[in-house]
Image 1: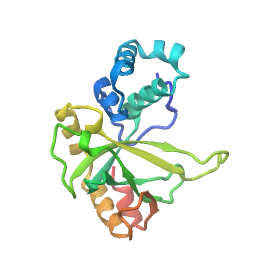
Image 2 (image 1 turned 135 degrees about the horizontal axis):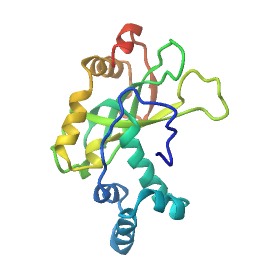
Image 3 (image 1 turned 90 degrees about the vertical axis):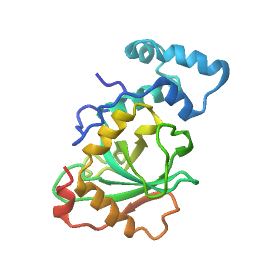
Length: 205
């Protein structure tokens, strides 16, 4: 049962990974007594903390990140600039219909907090994404945006991260490679629509 994510929309390749409470608290930068309080709170059953503390922004976000990595969609990502924390991620935003909507998203993540591997420019990483619809547009054929998060930022389980990486198809990596070539300013965060062969996009699995 999901509390923050619509289960009616199924990911083509769900993450199916468990995040760490400690890594999540590292990710949001929580320290001191507050960190201890939330660590204890997050140890309680999810249905309990959602029912009684779900209006708390941090609690809601933690539950959402749990659900994101469990049922969100696996995407290919590459490190653009490790010092700036910039990554590029590929996905197809098509929601319904046969028209493909390939995009590259340049986003920023706290790469310095990844401790289980050494991060380099050009490195391939697995991300798991949630997708967001345009408000008040029930007939939209494509998602408006997506939010990729790096698995290594939320767990130190290297085997789980490597398994995610191994599940990304060569076609997906090819779409990412060709898409990045079409982004002129790779150091500016944003969502970039790209052009790819429909057959390649549909072959990403």
